[in-house]
Amino acid sequence: QVQLVESGGGLVQPGGSLRLACTASGLRFHAAGLGWYRQAPGEEREFVALITSGGNTKYNDTVKGRFTISRDNAKNALYLQMNNLLPADTAVYYCNAAIVGEKVDIYWGQGTQVTVAS
Image 1: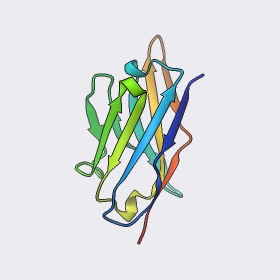
Image 2: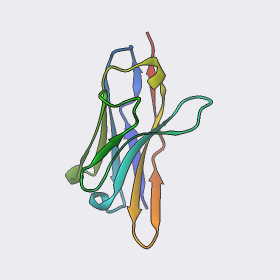
Image 3: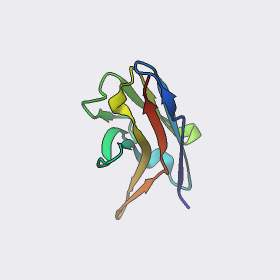
């Protein structure tokens, strides 16, 4: 059974930093495309960043230059380093894994709350 577990969320002041982690089990982690999404209250879930199995990355324009996505295949872990946080970054952050085979299997974590406020 695939499991994705996020951690590292919390309350931080504007301009501060947080590092989110997502640990995975039950899937071929090295072969997965991985991503972070977020959902603010009353809003749709939106894409934040992704990293392919080959290490290529892509970011939402609103976080480019502030957030860095990375992965450690040896630890089955995905990370999101978030710097210079803004109140607009307040949301529940979810990690996502996609395995492409005969079909695409997509998995989600349960989310971790990030609140940016003074």
